[in-house]
Amino acid sequence: KGDNGYYDLLRNRLIFPIRDSNGQPIAFAGRVLDNSLPKYINSPESAIYRKSSVLFGVDLALRAIRQTGTAIIVEGYFDHLALSQAGIHHALATCGTALTDGHLMMLKKHTERICLLFDGDNAGRSATVKAMERCMTHGLPVYVISLPQPEDPDSYLRKYGSEQFLEEVQRAKPAFQQFLLWLIAKTPADSVDRRIRLLDEIMPRYSIIADSMERDLYRKEV
Image 1 (cartoon, one colour):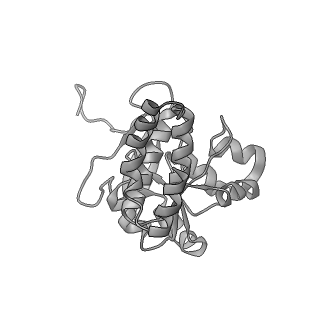
Image 2 (image 1 turned 90 degrees about the vertical axis):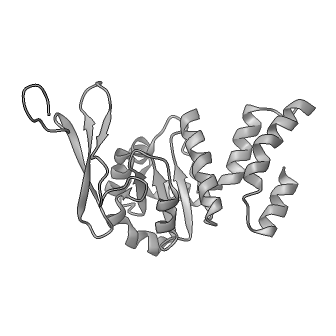
Image 3 (image 1 turned 180 degrees about the vertical axis):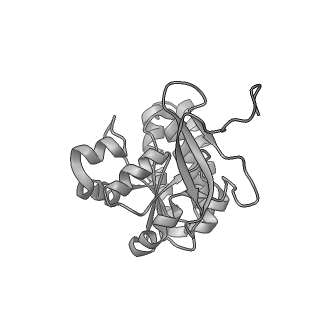
């Protein structure tokens, strides 16, 4: 309620309906049409809407996820819409939050692997590593799709099309391998001190790997 009476929480915004797995609307997200802040506003959490357990597009994606054995996780609503318009239906977007245990408990029932497609900047890489840790904790194979910079899903699909995008999905690297590559690029292992710093970053994530053969292969890699 404002000084002049009641007004729409999502006024002057582009509105995205957020649905549950049965296709029933449970919340809305609104994006500004200019440069004002905050860029996004979501409906308040309620008995039927919890950001930590809902993924945008879940009602459209579950059948395709079961058919392909893969769930592609993107950061934004527009990323999801770009993929959907291109006929790539096994994609989901987080609703303004990180990938959570609730999301993964739901996904484990439907998919064999997770492919993360977040922004290529430092914030996106940090989000990717955190999502990787959660997936590994849940025993879900997790991979990273790396698009050439500065492309995002929409610009990539416009330039190269859906077939080439699906080839990028097939080329996705195991997330832990990609994490090692990013880490080495940021902190070259050219001194004992830097190697110790690298191991301090690596070992907590390495310890999450459950499969003994995978652990042995990565131990040799490290």
